[in-house]
Amino acid sequence: MARALVVQHHPSEGLGWFQEWLPAASLDVHPIHPYLGHRVPSSVEGDALIVLGGPMGCMDDDHATWLPAVRSLLRTAVDDGVPTLGLCLGAQLLAAATGGYVERGTRGPELGRGSVQVTDDDDLLTAGPMPVVQWHFDTITALPPGAVLLGSSDVYEVQAFRLGEVAWGLQFHVEATTDMVREWADNDAAAVRETGREPADVVSEVTFAESALTAAGIALAHRFARLVTG
Image 1 (cartoon, rainbow, N blue to C red):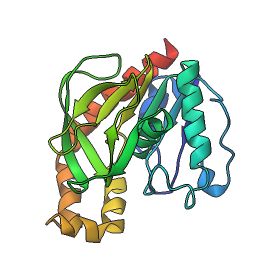
Image 2: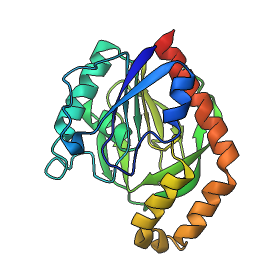
Image 3: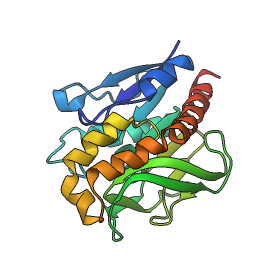
């Protein structure tokens, strides 16, 4: 079975549904946890790279000392043509590592159920509205040279992009379970309330949309696995 190296930055932002969906599509997942001291390799040890989200900023190197190594790993993966998927923080790290810019979102955070308009079909994404889970405070304000914008939301333009042929950054989450969202909402309760909602309302919105969210996530996970396995 093909193998994906997974970089996880925080206990609350794991593989979620991907732990089930990717192996079902013949792509085994091997997470490393650099916040626990795991080594970040200089090149991808496996057939694909997935970089997950986290509460830190993509340049918070003093707080998360492994981030420079992750940015270097992402650059190497792109240069080597390794199928790569960055989710939320992972997308921001991919952008920052390859010449893009990430800044605090001037229109506030996107938290909870959302929709991204995918503008073009490619090997990973299908054009049209895509239901997603959002949970970010920073945003990609400039894409890396040569990157192709693939999706936007009503709040922030850069929601999905491709770099080269087989590297994607997704500002949103497709892997998030309701339990993960519940934990995020509890952890960021003050920020949620600043948007005029209660944490329980955000969780209820995601729960209500779970069938649509998981259908979109399964489709994307299987397309990524096919890219890796051929």
